[in-house]
Structure formats: C-alpha cells, structure tokens
Length: 176
Length: 77
Image 1 (tube, rainbow over the protein chains, first blue to last red):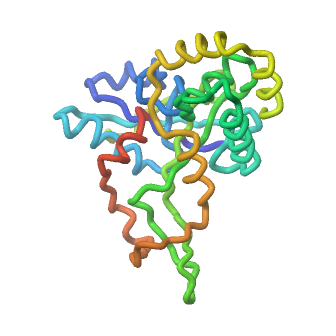
Image 2: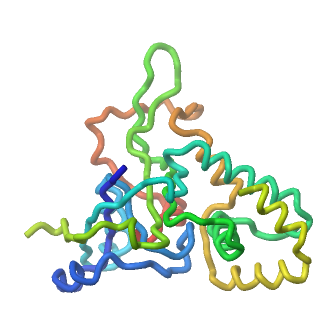
C-alpha cells in the first residue's frame, strides 16, 4: 500500500531548498516513536493543526511538504495491523513481568529504541494513530452508542528512508 | 518479538539493563506510556463513548482545535 505523507516544517522562504533536501528527520526530544522522519498519514488537516500549534502561534509561518510512503510488511503498523498491536501488547506484558524493569518508565518510544538496539525490532517504519477529542464520530445507528471515528490522527515514523519514502518531496502548502 | 525479548532478558543482568536503559533515558523520548498507548489503541476503530452525546457529521471536518494534553502527544511531523 502507498499512502501520502505530509510533513509540517517552518516556512523560511526556502521552498526550493526544502523540496531538494526534504523530507527531514526529526530528533526532537518529544518524539514518541523514536528518531526518524515523521509524517501525518493522508489527512493533511492534522499537518495544518501541527503548523498552527508549533509555528503559527509563535508568529512563524509554516509549510507542508508531501511525498508517497510505502506501507508494507516492513512497517510496524499499529494502525492497520492488529497482529502488530497484539505483539506490542505482548512485549509490554513481558516487560511488566520482568523484575529488570521494576520502577522503570516504560514508554512506547523507549521500548522501541531498546528493541532496536537489541536487534529485535527489524522494521523500517512505524505507523501509529490515536483518537483525539477532535474525533469526528459517525454513529452506527439505532440506540447503540458505538460509533466510527473517521478522522483518526495517524502518524508514520520512517526509520530507514530507503525503499520507504518515494520522491519527489513537494511543497503542497502554501500553494503557488 | 515478545519471545525473543523474553529470551534476551533472561540473559541480561540488572547492571547491563540499567546501563542501557540510562542511555535510552538520556535521549529524552517523551510520549505515552506503553499502558496508555495500548489502552487507547485497543479501542479502535469502534469506540464506546460513555461521557458524550455529541456526534459529529462528516460536514464538521474543519473543526480542529488542540487541547494542551494532546499537544504532548503531537510531534514534529
């Protein structure tokens, strides 16, 4: 499967440079899936939201670049593959049961980094989503309260770009 | 993956684990705990909504406002 990934960046009036050198890896401390190239999956509105909260509210302009991303069996797909989610749950259960991890802060990013270092995590990307309180919910109808969330916020962290990120990387916002 | 991890941990000393984990801690990764993440994602795609009667239509798709807590989960994409 090929999806469209969107990356929000500060607009420094250097679109040509961004298109030539992008996309860019992220090494911020608040990355929650570890270091890599981060993209919003398919829904450009989340890229705009991130531009608003991380740039515009601080008086900076932002731009959004886009490229194609391959989601295949080398993607640890926590959004679309329930087996992978189950595997993560099993990893968590092992860690919780191990006295070695007593008292340790077991966050997703740290665990993935540990698995990478030990050669257990052999994926080139991670796809993961969350349900926000901006979720758009469509009822299944009747008296049931269950509903379908039609705009989950999904991100892709590409650990190894080769063979996963497909050029070109084009700036799609602002438009010409 | 879990089985390989279990085998690995069986051969790992507390001292080695503490040292490696300190290196990872030093990277400063934030984000949800494993437990929080699994709880959230186990609810998809069908969500049992308990506390809200609000159902959006598809026509409300431009309504995006981030709360402070959500910014903690948002990252530099």
